[in-house]
Length: 368
Image 1 (cartoon, rainbow, N blue to C red):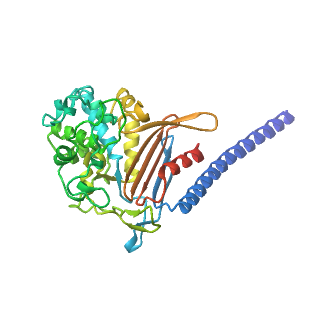
Image 2 (tube, one colour; image 1 turned 90 degrees about the vertical axis):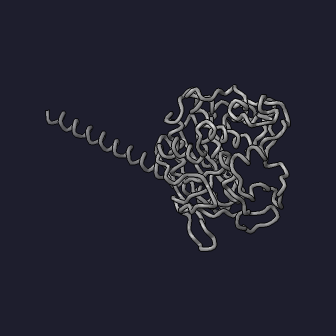
């Protein structure tokens, strides 16, 4: 009997020891993985002059959040994880979500033409272009950024160097004859999303800034996000710096009215706030699953509604991802969401020194 008890005790001890060793090895493996990720990010950031903030979430848990470089070079102010950045064309996804919310409410029909919602729009596009074609950049309306407006200047930013209302941006610079038939060609254009912003204002009868605050920012607790303006002080907003093609040094961003980008690129945010938006969008807190599927359905150029949908090869499989980029001179942003792996990578920067898309893809490989 004593012998049996001894055998049981020895067996139990071996089991507990092996369990402890297994748990320890798993924990060590996790730490090693984190160290490898840290080492990779720091090395890439140094080699590619990265200046900004990186946030990585996997399986609903934040696994990395670090900042590099300076928020304000004149005062040597360091970047922090709470630093605020212009997010440029990531704004387009907010606009797309606001439009799709109205689709769910029956106030907008995706196949309906532009004149239904903007009766004052005078060009032939009014009766040919649908809301769907505005959302996926196949409207055929000329991109206002390429039009030589009356105050066109050295850097080709013309009307962005003078403050205009959203109506002016649409009717003066985005109301042009079609350059191709709607639906035939993918042609990325800020004008499409300025028009969508004005449609939102017409339906809600309030400024876009109020709409995005009431429908998205306030409900999600995105307290460090909003619309850029030269007429208000935004706490923690980083200064952007631009490296010209023929030079190596950084200069302060080109003087433009960032507010003129409105619903196409006029927002600011933080990595933490954008993660709230990501979690709410993919958690179906903003739009329904069927509607999200529409947003993520790739058309021409693998573009859905405001985002690209692409695959990248892993070791033994493909990882389907949503990509959204934003850049205005030195302000630079990337938001990736890997749909099969539930991984989100958000990188915000205040320079154009680093290829953020390449950075995000390489981070993803190290995470997977």
